[in-house]
Image (cartoon, rainbow, N blue to C red; front, side, top):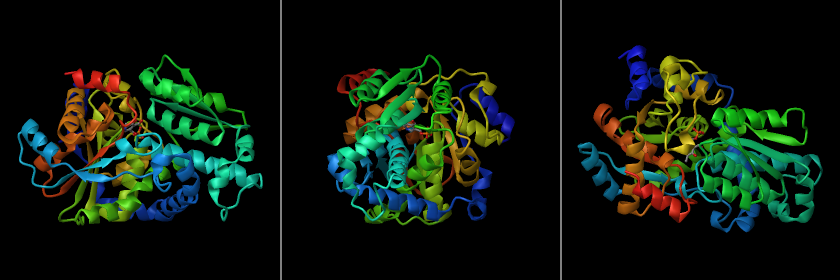
Length: 416
Ligand SMILES: Cc1ncc(COP(=O)(O)O)c(C=O)c1O
């Protein structure tokens, strides 16, 4: 089926599955790219240096590691079979970034990494820190005094704001979070509790990012965490793939091209799924097939994949941004991630809000797993891949939810 067919489906807000023809050239593409596996390893070494600090500052990190478990979900697999009327031959796992320490979402991987790197750079420049030090010294008042001269700014639909805001405030930076109109009230309140300044904008995600970027222009004491362009965010996300091989081996999953692991990644601007796919491509090659998952009301990354336009915007489809999945409510993709994603990803799909809300309920009732609607976007990948691709095991990346207040969670459970 051609580009026009897929675009007309996106315009009609239909749920589609798209296989990326460039996926088979992944290996050649990676060889030519100037970002390498070594960059991911270096990012991981940086996170390791911070572990003594993180362990003391955030008890939920257990040994200072920002990582989540994978879990097989047989009860939910049966639910998926019933809902979509299929027999699922592969095993079904979830990656539990909904419980990721500190900020409870996939965005913590990138956001926290970028803030830590900034702190390290400043403290080394000022002669207060060296790579050989025990980084627990970042708990000292002197360190906080140095960092308090700087402001970390970010534009966000919510979860990147939480990650950057919490980590910045903990280190002693001033934190300023520009939020889009889609951002949930509880996320704003949580940030304020951490001492971050929350600036609310009437516009969408792109507008909030633009305002944050503008705020930093000409201010040498301000650092903008740029969700649409940041390589540091991208590498922070990518580090997750380094540990996945071992995690999968523990549950007897050894991906191969004959029996790949298919990974479903909820996608907003494309940074987090892009970084993770990039890491997976380096670790597993085409034995890992990563798919982007987006609401029919915010299909910007799949639109860029299908049309080949890096600056695709859903306005071109004549549709309004509209989804209950606040983390995915994005009209245009990341300029850094798209040129990479479109050469390494196996494909993408869109789904209805109702399907995400069903997965919130179903994962809670069958597996006692708490997620937010954005985090449920990956579930439909199991159906599409079983139907159109073939033999594999499935990994649904659950991207957020741990911090949702109970009353908000009950509200979500009650939406039909
Ligand atoms: C819960 C959740 N899942 C997935 C994403 C998608 O990440 P990205 O915007 O980098 O594609 C977000 C983004 O904020 C999110 O909050």
